Amino acid sequence: MASTDYVLNGIALRRKLQSVGWVHRIEVAVDAFAAAVLLALFSPVMLVIAWSIWRLDGSPVLFAHHRVGHGGRVFRCFKFRSMRLDSAQMLAELLRTDPVAREEWHRDQKLTNDPRITPIGQFLRRTSLDELPQLFNVLRGEMRLVGPRPITVTELHRYGAARWHYLCVRPGVTGLWQVSGRNDTTYEERVSLDRTYVEQRSWWFDMVILFRTIRVVLNRSGAR
Image 1 (cartoon, rainbow, N blue to C red):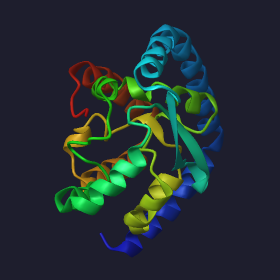
Image 2: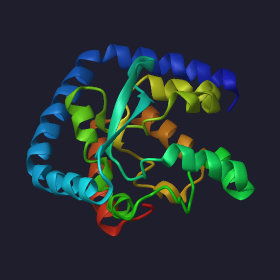
Image 3: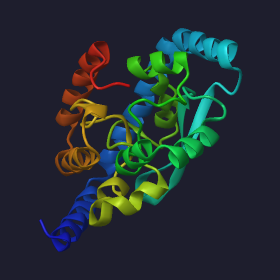
Image 4: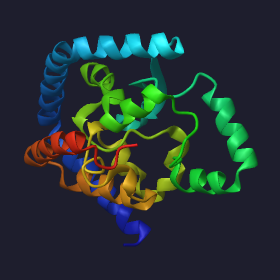
């Protein structure tokens, strides 16, 4: 599809979303209520995780990275910290000295064997428990339970004309990418999955993704 078609589709999608704005506000409110319930249910688990991170690797126990949200607004996306405190320096040194890692990082913005991840961080990532604090983002109205991946400002330029897909809706704690292979997919496949979700999003589609998320988390599919 030509880039012009993407732009035209983006304009049509924005108009469609604006026309059902009241429905979207109800969805956000329902998600916030669900996030509050889930936070209450998972609070004992989250306290144990926070204590374990602090005991083994000190504070802070949370990591807040700036991500792009609805309408291009930047917000702090919360996660349990799964990397070492000196992770930024480690990444810079690794990319400077390891051409294979440098190529993988520039291609996928991820590393298959990431030396920055702590032992408890490995467990949290494989079980997806590191993402539980994003329920606070849902409670604050910055994210939805289901949506596209929350991406960084520096990633936006890689999406070209398809960036409107990420700017038209709130990012999600889970989404079509997370239940379709997750880290086993390529960067291009991730973008395609997120674009498909935005174009086909519906209440029923969200419910299907939520139920598939439970299965994926239990099986630890594509998590690392």
